[in-house]
Image (cartoon, rainbow, N blue to C red):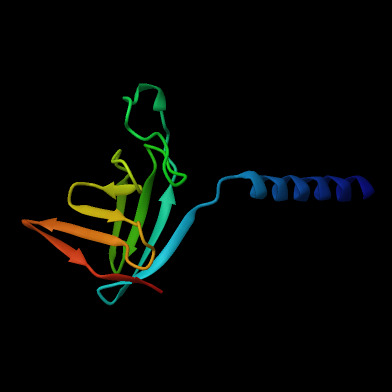
Length: 122
């Protein structure tokens, strides 16, 4: 009995340690054009050895290969991080997301012209 309790406590301690050191997702919520928009940073596999000079390897805690998962109304987008300098930006060529100022994130859609979606923090 005592042996099984010790094993249970050991497993519980291992689980707590794993939760404390494992990377946790980052997310935030905004209202964009009247609908809730949530963004979660996703971590991707990264090989930074082949990046050219001048391309940022990391910015704001993100690396090339990372991305964001955007949920907006019925829409779910998975956007990869760009290698643009400055604040991390994410695009698939049609949709574009960037947060320089959390009170006014930039959310654009290209449909012949560029549509700017108005976003504000929740």
